[in-house]
Image 1 (tube, rainbow, N blue to C red):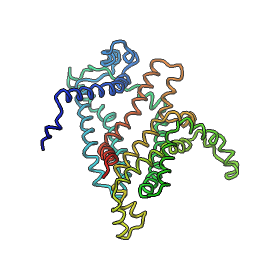
Image 2: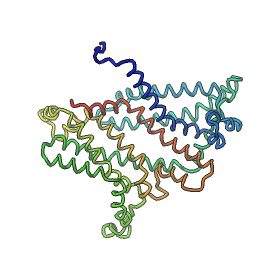
Image 3: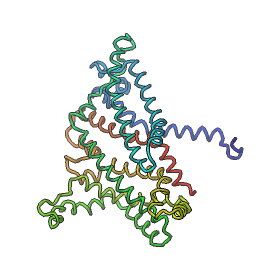
Image 4: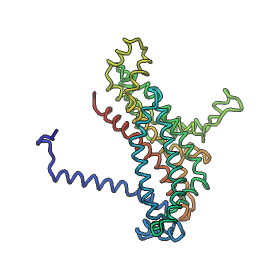
Length: 385
């Protein structure tokens, strides 16, 4: 169906819009691309004054670390196949092999399995295969692009960055689980309630969400520091100290995130016709059964979208995690900041860059895998059905 003439954009407007979008994408993507390039170079190349030395890494290549033409071609093919699989086949497999009530669990298993398989193939199997190909392909197997993964090995193995990664997973999993559990129940109840009390509860939640994070942390901090004394009448001498533990961070981040979660999920529930609830009740379902078996399957795009925002809050938080966690339980973001808060060498700085690049990989993976659900959820929340 052709576009009506009155709705057609002029050539100048189309070119201007396309040019602006291209410029914005390049401007936003350049820092990520640049630090990714630096993370695979020796310190001499990473901080070279000539941008071409940063990209091609002559000093890194001179140290015996580099990629050949064969490496680049095969690596790009594997990346492209992985992208196509994550965008197409992976969602189809989740839909095919999961039951209606286990969609979230199926997605969690699928994402973890895909990530592990990609790491094993790309960083273990592929280098072994390519080393054999380079040995028999002559000039095509000679390094032309300097690249080393030494900094990633130093970060994850020598500096035990994986501990910070596990702490981040614990915090984000707790924030997402609690926020979505409470948010879905509260959002459904407020969406189906016609009382003025529901409206004022939403306004109160919005005001609470607008408070600076530092205000909430200042209110919780004395309670967590003195938690052992507060809990001693209940637990005796074995009363735990919450300060420095991930559970304290989860509690604070849930308190910060819950108003936003309730508002967002309430808008999704509000767009679902009440006739679905009534039909389920006529068929013999209780209120909770109607919510679980009828409404929630329709709500999955909205739940996934809201869960992604909750994940980003817990995953990227710096203020709350840096103030409430001790050195042993730090998440990744404050741990990276620790690289720059001490006297550092150029090697330490490149390792910090490698750590920063590492924490962006799960975000790209999540958006890539869930992009259809995110778009569907944002559309459902924006348009009244």
